[in-house]
Length: 97
Image 1 (cartoon, one colour):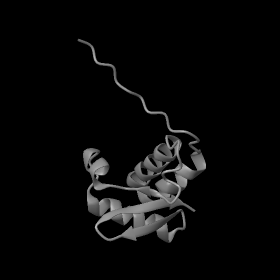
Image 2: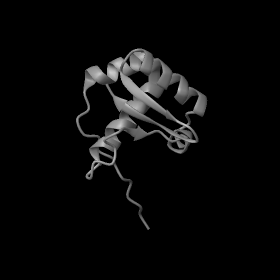
Image 3: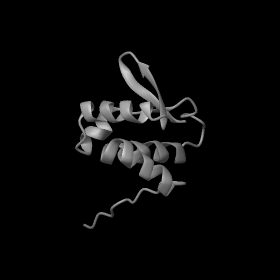
Image 4: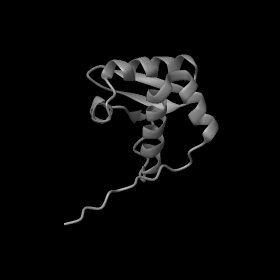
């Protein structure tokens, strides 16, 4: 039995945005950028209008620790690339600025 690998399409990826995320937070920053862009691209009903929740599960599956994610979020927020809404007991909501 042959299984087919799914390729995900990320809508409206811009090289300048990716390079600024890379310069600010390295590979983790690019992962955050891609995750947000993908989620916004597949959002048909406006679910992510207030921001995209960044759960630790996705990042752990891709080899990124919780601490690395939060460090990258802090760097990206300080450089005004994203806005972050911290929520107690839940994943932070992240939007592009």
